Length: 449
Image 1: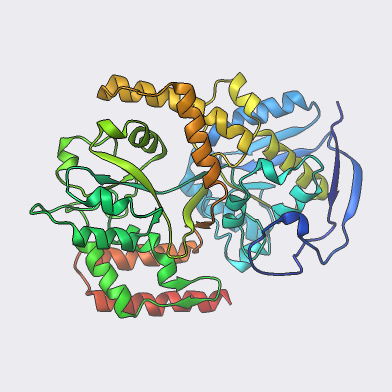
Image 2: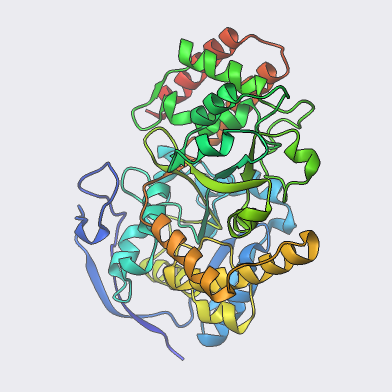
């Protein structure tokens, strides 16, 4: 069978005329290059190669199903022997050397680095050229948060957010938390300092100085304008308080939230960071739990801290036909009917709205079982009502402004981790930490141009 797509493509790399800023509506985008229409692009006989070091979100299954639906099209997945460390080391080098596969899982790539971006394809024009693409079907704010200067090099399938809950056993904490529609890391530190208690409480098991800084990074660094503001009294005070609220003997840099709190956790932590499953438990069964009333974490500008994942880059050396195939395959992986047919779990926040409801239904089934069988919690609403309630919440989140928390390069990640770990372990002072970060991050920003 020959699959034909009525899609328009560029013969060369496409650049936005505006050159910077977020995209409010990609249908309003203009281009430097003339758009050449390929009314009947024949994908028969084409091969799409994908670099992906793990079986992430059933990629192999989707590849097989796509090939069954489109005979004559071949999809080859290179998993680098199943070793992500080898992939992260070799794949960026292959891209620079001009020998990389067509699609590349984004782990290990500094897709915010201009030198890397010059080798990648912007996904936005492919979306615009697809006559079946409808912006209303997607959480466009996720695409915008993952974009750089109005160009989308990193195309995600899903996104995750940060939530925190307050300890109901400590007077006033939940009340102070609920005064915020969204809350910043600095707000949490302030509430922690103002809490009236004789017991020593920490913020949550996943909290340390590194994570506190990353969650509040926009207060101290303007990546777009290449400005660092670490050597300031505000930053010094911030990391000093953050270290005080870090649980002792915590493994530095570990970021995963805890499970449903038991009594020991209640006695030790003022706030708890939540995963998607624990968010559902804490919000559905809030009257029966010690940690409840989840609040979304945001930066100082009110942007939600979004982490797109299961994300893919597109090699700039690909032909227009391969780019058409790549986008069509990505769209295929958003199809909720395939998830239903194969009874696949969906991460709680897919960026495709029609998939969100199915994702909630599957996630809530496991949530009810987890909460009732493991913790004896009782559901007071019907499952159908809960799905509608949560769908409305997540649908609204899909309209809120977001910032990609991974908007720094991997070089910066290593620097932050190295320097803040030394401070975390008491090897350098807060003032030395501020000076080191100011000098080293400023250098990296200068190199980016």
